[in-house]
Image (cartoon, rainbow, N blue to C red):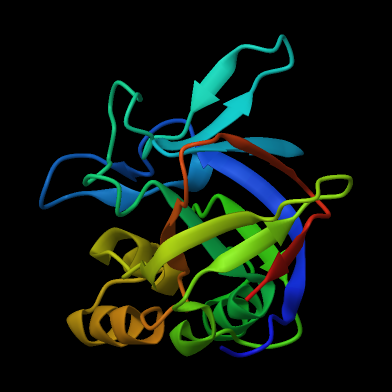
Length: 195
């Protein structure tokens, strides 16, 4: 088994409070306004939970307990992405592709594009003052949807949409994962992420 290597540090944690895909088919659109950024996130086997300033929990829309859950079993309860992917998206589509706009729970600052082969066997998060790293497994590519791809390209056109769907695939838009084990874990901005 290869030696673990540091991918980078967490620079953004967030949940999707509400759906980011709005409207009715076939006239749906993507709006990242439902995102809530936090400094600390609780990871559970059922998904991510943030805390409001008063301490009350707010589950991510992919959490199994969310009243409008977008969970498809346990395969898409948590997600992560990387800052160079956003730099590439901004370079291609513009400044509206801000870090985190794809809605992943964990955003990691690193110095390169991270392909599935590097994270396929999972990632671990090392928290300051905690001996045991937090393990996330079941990693798979978060395929871009039509709505997010249309949001990225900011314009009509079947050819442009197809090109956006292709460009945003293969991990560019991020990765789905799940918490390994049954014990909830708290992560914070600044924690290290290893592969």
